[in-house]
Image (tube, rainbow, N blue to C red; front, side):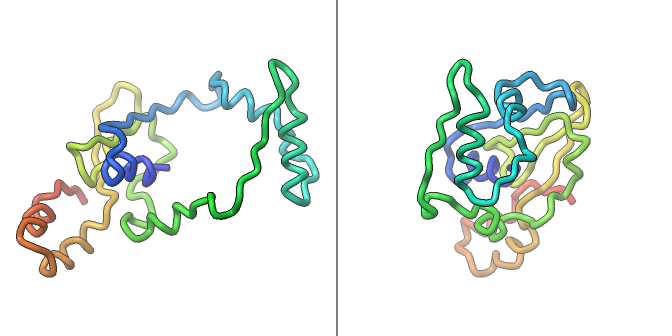
Length: 153
């Protein structure tokens, strides 16, 4: 998720900033969490159609879930795609994080904090060392850009 958010802000340039705040564990009243709680995750599902049937029948009010079948070519393998550009393992532990932010002015960095009102920390998620090794093969403008990327080990 973190790599996808970074991609949306910096590569796709769809948003200027994304801030994700995690609720206190076990106290989520978000609609998506309440909806997923209705799904019997222990149902005996042997094929995809079994899951379709479970999702369509698990909620009646206000209306049942609508399952839309898609072709395999519409499903993207984002994990494999992102391994080219991003570190394989997140450089900081995700579990204790209460909030993180990805914004355009901080390319290559993720700001995060472990409490809701604590100070922000930063960490690099792009492959900084790889960029530095490939720098000599780039034009001067790109070399200067890669040289000045904010980076924290």
